[in-house]
Length: 602
Image (cartoon, rainbow, N blue to C red; front, side):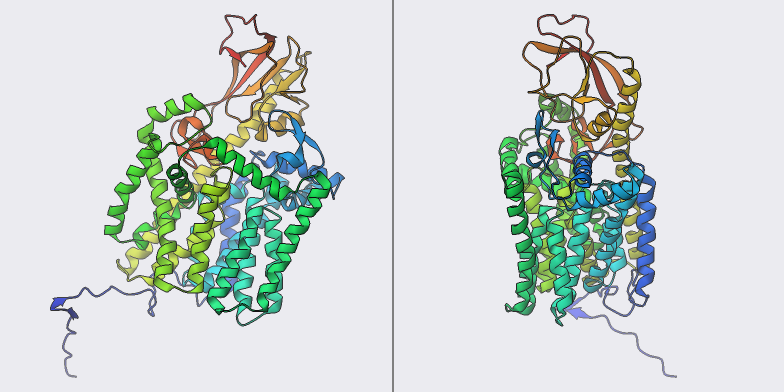
């Protein structure tokens, strides 16, 4: 047999061109390709992975706004058509729940169904809320199958993130809303062309359900409208399906207006605007905080950056992200008001190097998220690219500039789109590594993201459980107390204190008397004040030390997973201060005992 001459290298203008190692669209993909698998196998893997990640946390104490959702769910059991027809002390004084809540009630109805049938225990409710988490994960996979050759990896890049895992351990509305969002999007994409009317009808109903779970779900209407126009280049009868969620939202606004004297959608919008004015801060600060939260909650975007970006791009972006992080940590960009005031600012100054380093990683991850969205539009310029890019960028804009605060719950909707975009970019680029190296980078990136995410989730669970433990210990310590006992603060602490019969302090209506006992948590929100003639002579009495060196809510470490009022990081690593609860007696303001440890609480 004649010996074949070796293939000559390609040349470009007289230079030897570097031939790509391979492309992901050839016949030998370098990553896990499941196109030949039966779909049920991928679904089974994802179900198992989701349960493995979340079931260990099913005993988590109720936390943050879980309390409001559970109060409303218990109201629904008694009065199904009046979900917010009761009063609650949440913002320092007794108010109507319809004035306090800023979310629609669909998740509360789901919790009410679970509570009425399986009981109100933490485990029963958390296990029931695994269903929305599973729906979110499986919906991500089904949508990703249309957009990338690596839908399983894209779904793992979604599942194994701090934003999703922490949110999925709550009984709030966010995970349910995103699950409905994903299936509405998937059915719309599949039903638009070739036309499948039942798919479009089901999608429109799911859009309405998503919006009635959390108002941001209404953003699907313009998002899918733009996608449809780019894909079809014309308006057709398909647009009439969008009237279903529009009519549902108008009907909900009219119903709540008649029931509570105000439309709750308008009320939520007014609240967001007023809170943004109170927080103040520069536009640049809001943009950087939103990048930090989007990136931190979607940490897979950073862990997989070597596959998505060239070494030169990473080296250029890294110092810029570091500079942005330092400017945020040192308040060069006017962060605005934050919980803790001067104390938090001082702690921020003392630990600015540690905070800046963590901010740099989160901002870099956020830049990667925005980058893959913009790059996908520039490369493909099709309806799918515009859908994913507007999905990501629109959510970021809402979280940073329209919502009442930046929080992980607001950026949660962009995480599935970011996971898909990462592997769409990997799918369309020349391979820069050998196949085994690429597979190793992908595996290591997902493993690192999983470890970090589970660590953060465990830290959030520990914080939630500490409030439950505090209420239990306070109950044991005060069982023999004869004077009235009041507590201040909210979140899960309020749920467990009221469950044990303690009375929430009301800034306007509580008739305090000298000698009354008051319990005050140090790390909480909306702490009510006292009449001018009284103060609480406090002494530090109860400290609960977490084992984790991570936190999701702590002004001292600039972590504010549930609200950026606590800081520009969605979570932080370091020495976590103890959860402190002060015990104090009501005394006249002019008779403060000089020996009182910790000083008076005013």
